[in-house]
Length: 139
Image 1 (tube, rainbow, N blue to C red):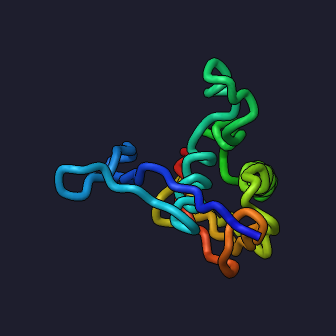
Image 2 (image 1 turned 90 degrees about the vertical axis):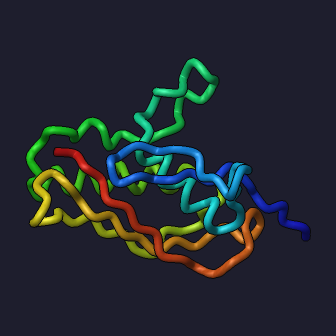
Image 3 (image 1 turned 60 degrees about the horizontal axis):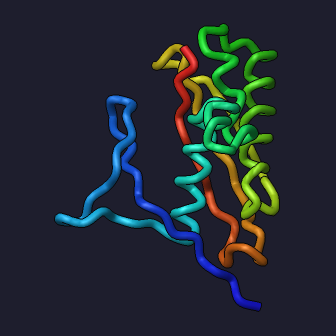
């Protein structure tokens, strides 16, 4: 069996919340394998589901934006966890989400820490389970 690695342009997630293309000298940088999957999962969570409909990807993204401005009650944290889980599972390279936690960040009201252990599908991406983490601002 031959597994074709996924490669893409590497994105730079800046402290001001913007995303830009990463450069290596004068060239654009690339990412592949597990790093590419991690980047793809981050972008899927940050993209509102349906936002890419006009580009032919109506189901791409997540429903995280539905909770923007909502208080991070136990019920809303559970809704957010389900939205994150659904988005992570929608990438065909994800075989299993072994663990998933969504916790509010006390020092940053409206921000939540998402951490997961993900097992890639060995038919699509070779490698062991890996840790995935992202901070989402839904305040």
